[in-house]
Image (tube, rainbow, N blue to C red; front, side):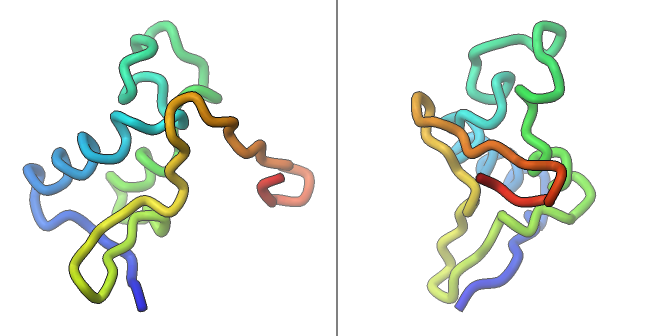
Amino acid sequence: MSQQWIPSNSTEGHQFINDWCSRCARDSVCNGQKTFDDCDDSELCQILDASFRGEAKEWIEHDDGRTECTAFVPLGAAQPQRDDRVGIMK
């Protein structure tokens, strides 16, 4: 069983971003591939944005205390594309 995970403080949130987002293909700024000014919206992770509102449903905590991002895409792997017409990933 797992549930949405919300960091209890900025240190915990920063550590999660360092552990997951810095190795993820979804955000070119966090993974160090580009600067914010060089990115377009498709290169920025909407999940990371949602996390600052406490709405990152992809950030979960397992019963054993492990945390993870269920949408993690390792750098170099193909990213799933969203079909906005039907609101699903393909």
